[in-house]
Amino acid sequence: MNYSAAIIHELAVSDPINDALLIYTDYGKSKFPRARTAQLVARFGESEGHALRQRIIALLSELQQPCAMPEGRSRKSVTERALEQLRPSHPELNETGLKALAWTYAFGLR
Image (tube, rainbow, N blue to C red; front, side, top):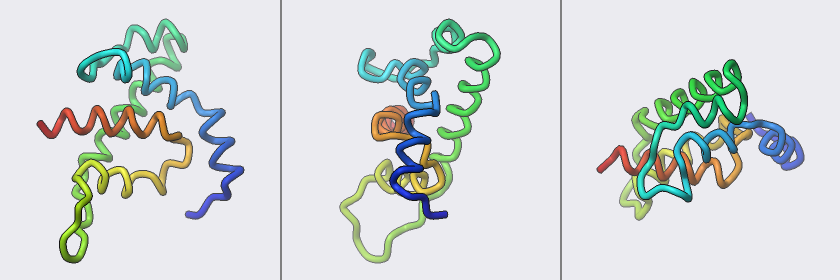
């Protein structure tokens, strides 16, 4: 599905998932990813906080799906390939949200 730049920008700005990713994973504050459900609930309320947590878990689960292997050699990391596969189907994610996902995913590979 192809989205225009304006629609992608509007989705990324209006969707709370990007802020939720930063809060839940503690991206940019912690040395390693965390699961901060209580902080999501404090920021977004009980119902929305838990719904955002489920979305984050679903995104991380989606990243775990096998990546299409490139033909020939590639200098791209597994994380980069996973994000390339995820990005087209999630225009609501901005660069910061994607970085938080990549950081969390990369820790799971260690």
